[in-house]
Image 1 (tube, rainbow, N blue to C red):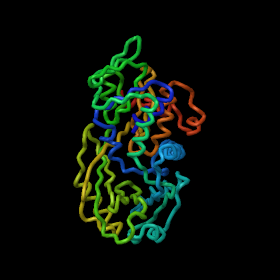
Image 2: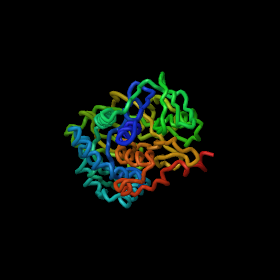
Image 3: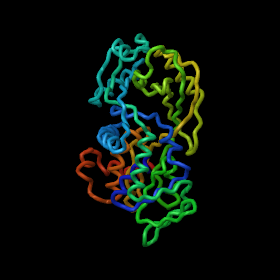
Image 4: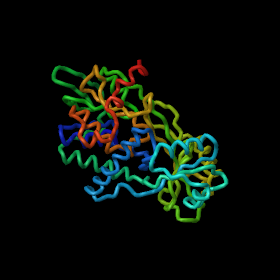
Length: 362
């Protein structure tokens, strides 16, 4: 999503070529996303970029004719002291949060075992997100603006001369003035090929699964329920329930396999907290969430290596904040002053730049 979104934004101002190692842009994190827009989820900067993305999602929906956001409440649950502290912090930091008693939480989420809940909070501004339609919209937009997209074109080498950059990707050689490295878990390998310092990306596996439920109510009306310490979550998915142990195991870049032990742990925790009756797994998969040392996104170039930009480290928040982050990144890559719109996000450019990571990566 990162590459597609920033390419669509940059294609308004510059000539753009997108190179993708895979056969499509959806084989890794984007195609395995839980597909949710969660304004109360993430750091202060992530929440600001997520909030700024809402009107952009509405605009993309209006242009494409496909509603990208469908409201679905987000229910944070505390079942022990650590998660109770987490709910308190969520309510303190997010204006979208409303505290609920266990009984109120059960009224919102009928299969909840209220006796297991110590506290809860709800974010009614959350929504399901149509990731596939968003991704298609970005590709359609960039192509309409003249961008070139090259699939099955892994980056082999990147060299710089007095005229700019030469990027060898697949069977192609692209000559360009600027490079945007939005390669997800592979950003450090791409940086190596260019002789650019790494940012210290940390790919982490996130397992997910789909299970039938024994709940006899209308599954589609249930909120997204999340343990406040992020030890599991569960949400409706086409008449079934999509769950996750919310694992974050550091792994090498590649195609991660779902962790069966983590799935078993999540099923047990969900059973202890709800009466959903998730006993079997119909399908399971895993994706990658990519972080740097401080768990904030990286947008920009090392000050000593101008012209080679990173857009990486979005963690598990990349989809929900994609439109606003792409606009901010496009301003930075185009080396223009921040627009009035992007400046209003309140996210400092210096706080996202790679230079902040120099101590952690040397």
